Length: 138
Image 1: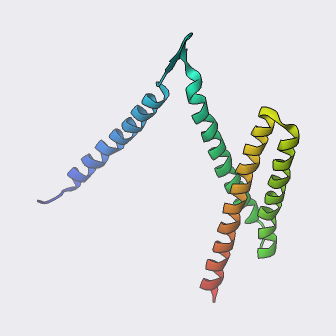
Image 2: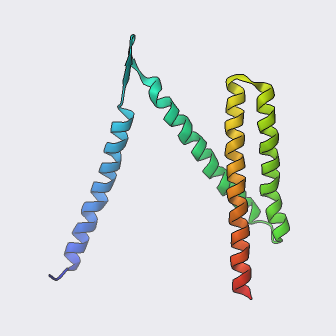
Image 3: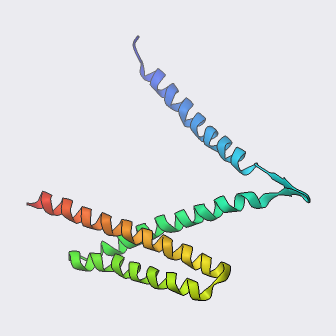
């Protein structure tokens, strides 16, 4: 069987339309879930998903920001200094969250955990990128 450009183009057009529709249907199904309580529909069941997604987004944005700021520096010592400083800040913020207590303290500890993970991932990425570039220059 011979494939022509027409078949490939029609395949791509079909899948360009079908994949976003499938993703949209998935999110409609997820967000249309309702749990019922004694007073009627309870929409608080999906708030947890929103909170987790916001923490994941904060972690990803923090990784990107740390990596972009560390690209300014030329020396590896200065590049590593920023993730280490963010690690220290996140540890201090974690202990402050116990002093604050309550829901606000839990929020601070979630933010500090997110910053801690972001700085660890950025630290590893910086070191690996430095090792790869230093080996290719030799």
